[in-house]
Image 1: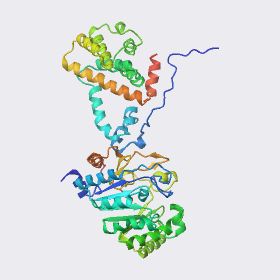
Image 2: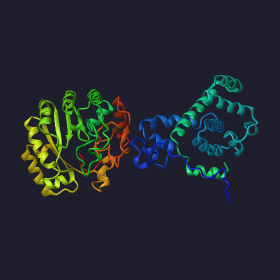
Image 3: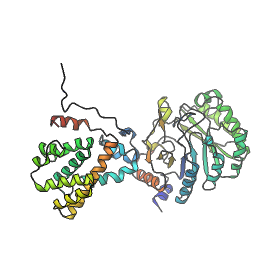
Image 4: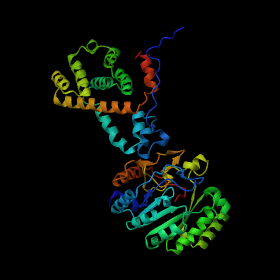
Length: 195
Length: 275
């Protein structure tokens, strides 16, 4: 008898490459972040250097969190950038956030690179945004020039969306380098969503 | 006044800066907070770093330095370094007192003219009971070292760390330290803190951070809340009382310390006599 591997059989993670701080070992300055339970692996790893937590989390919150740019667009940017960068942690985590932000399953699959973007995103503006994410993540001047021409947004939108891509790349590198583990809740949800 | 000066003035923060010169030790005491011993990672602060921190501390208004470890006198140039540090701020150096043979006594002799006090551990008036906790010949070496140091004009304090306080034992210990030439004012008694090797060995009292004296403490691994804070348990540095990894400029950990001090809950003062 042969067993066929299903696409969503749980693949074991590599162990995180740094110790994730828990509530008992959380440095004094970081204890508030652990007060409500597990703050997730980004905070739990950053807490190794407590003086970075204070400046870093408000910055990430300001760039990645709610702002004048609609949440749908922000999640398109974060998920597409993470998929392009090959970040397992961010792609899995933000697949769920994107679904919860109102993106459809087909859209999420397309952003993850499992379907053609054009099939899931009929809107030319959103396709231009996705192309901009890819160009910024790759950083090639010719791609950037072309993608900027297609992106009809005003300068303020371009600045914020570009910082969002760049910050996502930062987190992609960080999470991949440290092999941060996806939470069990996220993995369960992705299995239920057949992703 | 600055926030730092305010904290010193109202007694919420000690004005001595502690420096962990190293973590290795010729002894391996049963209750050691830092799991120090002969073969552990040394985690040394370089002399240049310690001198730099001393100057920064003086400029910020700190009034003294504490040097601890590990056994500081395992650092090759410690006698000379203590002389240099004491030219910046008065120094209290903690030592197990077991290395003061002729050669080292000659090298520390100039400290008799410096603002240096040595704090030596002695836990029990009976040699056997003392040495069970601290190692063979500890008692006899300390009892020999204390008068030899005093004879050279070097200030000596005795620190006693107890698992259970026995009035009779303590009275006999006080008689002993007086006979050695150390006054009651220079005798510190404190409980074993349940951290490091003491925790592994099921010894000591549990201390919250609020129970530990807030005194900025710098090690090779970062800055901590108290000299009782940068402990090691089963070979791993405890980070629960870590303030910052950045130690220079000293203003950085000072700011972290003041932030934590400012966030302390009201009425959470310690009831433990930890000094």
